[in-house]
Length: 154
Image (cartoon, one colour):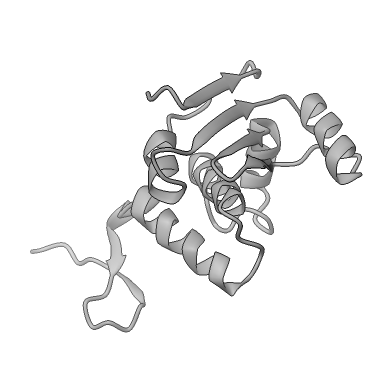
């Protein structure tokens, strides 16, 4: 880990390993100073209420402190609950959704707002860091963008 990166875990549950440092350097740059905290729903709710006037815990919060310094706060309990809710999980499991939210938070620190441009950047980094060739599924080579099952050789 570099001197300009810190990670705080204030939760009791197991958090999957993520390539946070590589993501930070790729999205924000090597000189960016990032604080990263995993917090409980209670702390998430307090922060969300204080800074966004929303009295509920949330999955991710980003705080830009200066041009080259910021903080990301993630509530794994909210992420875990959302990963089980098919309407909110973008078809991702807990680790994949957690990684996606790290990317989302970093893009906000970079100055991006919710838009199609941000959606494209999220997809780019999500694919680069979290795409898995699961259960024999892969992109079809025809370029159609469809996914097909690989056939077993007889």
